[in-house]
Image (cartoon, rainbow, N blue to C red; front, side, top):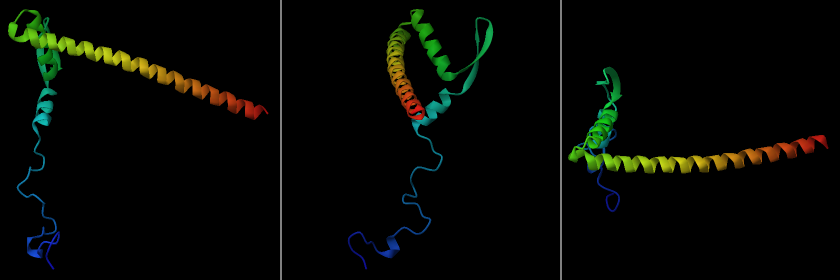
Length: 124
């Protein structure tokens, strides 16, 4: 029987057949996954006469900031934006640590009260 939400058997998907056989191939990564994998690869650089191994992301940030500080106009705005983002991140991190500390203090205080109450019950 065919009709609404009941297509003919010959046009229905066969067992083991994908719903979109021409869709994205398995293992095919999107742009962000590819960029992240590439930026996380390690490379060797020379810095102050010493060889260092850093990720490409670290090298990118280091180079951008150094060129911005040196006065390269192409990199100055990018470096300044990075600095502002880093400051915002540090402020957020400090705030989160303070909040976490308050939460931890409450947990410790509640635990202390519970232990004291249990000890009173045992003594009685």
